[in-house]
Length: 91
Image 1: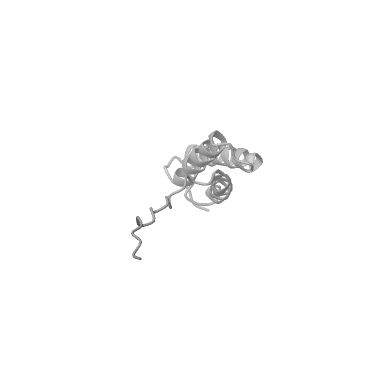
Image 2: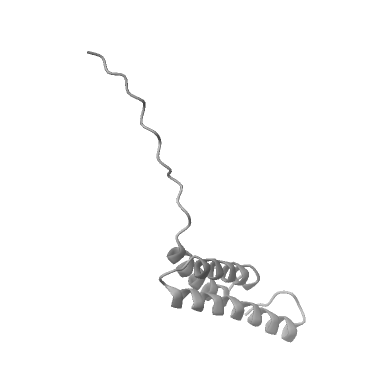
């Protein structure tokens, strides 16, 4: 006897971003931003840390450290801009 069944329904393969991964990424980008590209990496670290904290990350310390480092990136950039009287700085 031939049995007709419905094809299996596809499962959702998209999952929300991992808040723990975002916390680690914000820490790494904030740390890297102290050396290079702090104009870009600082705000990205701040956004990633804020979103991971709002989504309830288990790595709260890393997210807070990423948030702090992201803000430090912008402070360092501002300090070097004032000292050098330019938008960029070099070693």
